[in-house]
Image (tube, rainbow, N blue to C red; front, side):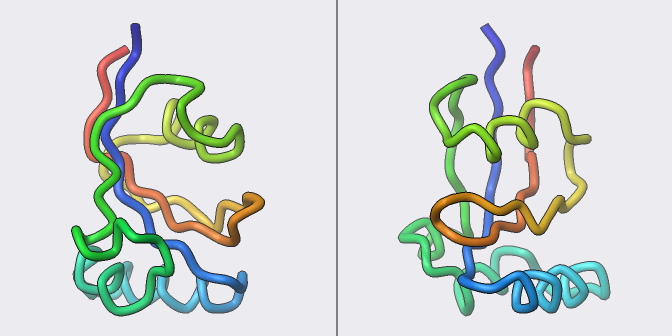
Length: 93
């Protein structure tokens, strides 16, 4: 069964999400940006969500995690929780 590890940043607006993505693309540290901005409890661990399988996260999140290239920040990804930046850190298909 497929497994992936990912980290994310959760914010309430698409504009904020895009602003943070630009900062990361310009060299800001993902984990530090997560600690300072993410509203998810995972922010304490730099946005790290650990390892999980398909279907364990909401559909929109799942789709990105199991299709996006590893190590490339994706987003904004809109879910019922808000807007996410997602980085797949590893994946086994």
